[in-house]
Length: 109
Image (cartoon, rainbow, N blue to C red):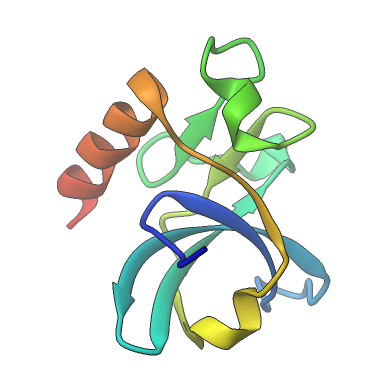
C-alpha cells in the first residue's frame, strides 16, 4: 500500500530532546519522499494556536490507530524516504477528523 496524506505511521524523528519512535501524519508525498508532522500525547505541551488536537472521544478517533488523545505539532515537519514507512502504518485521519485536519493545515500554511 502506498503512503497517502493523512496516513499515520510510526517514525523515528527527533522532537525537542525526544528521539523515540512516535506516530507521524503524512502531509505530502512527492516521489520517493514523504513529509510528516509528529504527534505527541504530552498534552501539557499542546499549543492551541499552532497544534491540532486529536481527542480520543471523537467519533473518527478509532481510525487513527492511536491509543490516547494526542496532538499534531505544528512546529515540526520532516522529509523522509518513503521506504522508511514500510510496515509501520498505524491508521489515518478520516471523516470529519480528516476534514478538520485539512482545514488546520490550510490555516497554518
